[in-house]
Amino acid sequence: MEYKINFIKKILASFKTDSIAFDTFYTSLWHITSKCIGFLIPYFIAIKYGVSDQTDAFFIAYAVIWFLCVVFSSAGQLTLVPFIAEKKSKKEDLNVFITNIIKTSFFVILIILIIFLVLSKFFLNLVNTSIQRDTKAIFDFILILSPTVLFYTYGGIFEGYLNYHKKFWIYPLSLAFRSLTIIIIFLLFSTKLNIYSVAIGYLIGEFVLLLNLYFVSVKKLGYKFVSLLNEDTTDRLKHFFKIAFFQIAFTVLTAINPLIDKTIAFIFAEGNLSILEYAEKIYLIFYNAIAVIFSKVLLSYWSDSYFLEPMSNLRNKILDASKKTILFCLPICIIVFLFKFSIANIIFNRGNINAEQVMLIASLVGVFIYQLIPAMIFKIFVNYYVINKLTTFLLATSVVRVILNVFFDIICINLFGIIGIVYSTLIHTTISIALFLLYFYKSNKVTP
Image 1: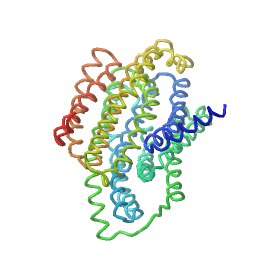
Image 2: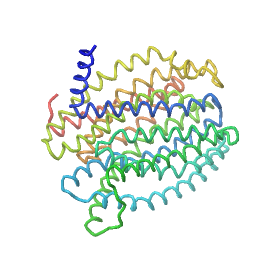
Image 3: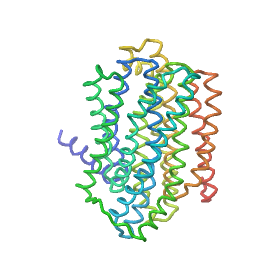
Image 4: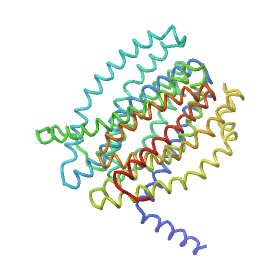
């Protein structure tokens, strides 16, 4: 018995010497835990409210707000990390740099939000008669959720700050607190406020997430909010926002693809969007636990490597990581595909979801899961181009991707129904990866 214990200890000790592998594994455990808790939110929505015009209204509103959250937070989650690595290597003050990013972005985001709300109200009133859906409920949800854009953006900045310092597990732990907050508010107020309790829960939950990330940054890493802004700092901020602009533009065109998918599903037929959302949430458990974490851990380590090692080492790491992701994800995809009906039945075969809807959710999950492989590789190469600040190329490829997405969405949904949306995503993501590889090999003259 003692021999077995020592053997396990040796394995764990050797595993820990590989910092990237250990951080990825440890953070993934936290992220899987937090995402499983987070999955209870759409589960409760499905059981309580089923598939209806009201659930469609909430999901389309959330998709719109989530689009804005992803767009603005990307500067902190991705672009900020290589900048921190660069400044750290030059022993510059990170507190001044990060504080001024927060202050500079506040009024910009606030103005954009106000303009967005005005335009949303105008657009929804304009299309109210033509789509014959509950557009008032959509705007109400958008209005309630709109402050989460600010909360999530600043959460992204502190997430990037924590990720650079290899505190990867803090964010998924904070996500767990956020999800628990949403669930508690839902359970307390769902009877009185109906599905609006979920929107209010998200609003408060995102604020809890931001507070937790901020206080950990202060207590664990010594972050201080400072007021200094000199000419030198202003020049550096301009450089950051110039690079971040292309990153944000790339994120806009990347994040708009799911929004396009959900808008087309929303218009196509009542209930389609809710079915798509429920299936996607199962897929996102795997995606967030694997692709997102793997991406963030590698971004931090590779950002350090960029300034300390030859460029060829980074390129080899990119290729090696891509090959390993395929080998790692393929068995997961096959297992989920084989048990998709069992998974959907266990989760959704209850409450206000009928058997036919459960079968459709299962079919969507079976296709969704194979998106995991191209999504992983896509994120790895995005990291490479972000570290090298080749965001103009990312922007160009994202334009192509949006055009392809609209084209294949329209064709596939008419040929295959709602499952065609997932086929479309698989096609345009794979084509994007092909473009990434082509530019990667051509620009760096790397031989396969």
